[in-house]
Length: 168
Image 1 (cartoon, helix red, strand yellow):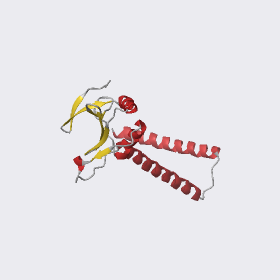
Image 2 (spheres, one colour):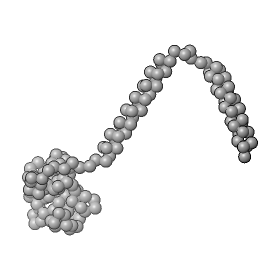
Image 3 (cartoon, helix red, strand yellow):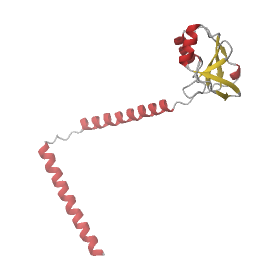
Image 4 (cartoon, one colour):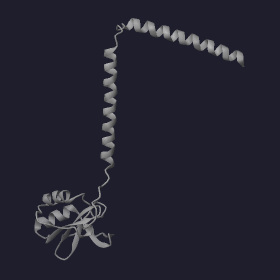
């Protein structure tokens, strides 16, 4: 009846895990005697007291599933129809709460900051353009000015290359 009979050493406690689908069936059949949220330094695990064993809710790879807080674990229990559970926080009594690292959120926040800086640059460029009192050029005039600039730069480059060739 039980799947995932993997036994691992988790914080010096031997824990057998059970999959969520199996817990759903057992809870529906009334075979879950007691449910406990067990605190650890980095989160909470859920353990279920069954008829003759105690098992922790496991991940797909058989490790105990770790929840960031009581609310996250309570949402899963609520979906299973389990509304009564106890919280065992003895492992973290007196310890300073630690914040879990969220590199995905840090990256998203950095991207948001970069996007805001880019938007400020665009706003500044638009404001500078609007403040420019010079008359606007037509596409023909702009092309003529660019052609003249290219010709001048080409002449300058040719003369610099000739001077360089003479010095060798």
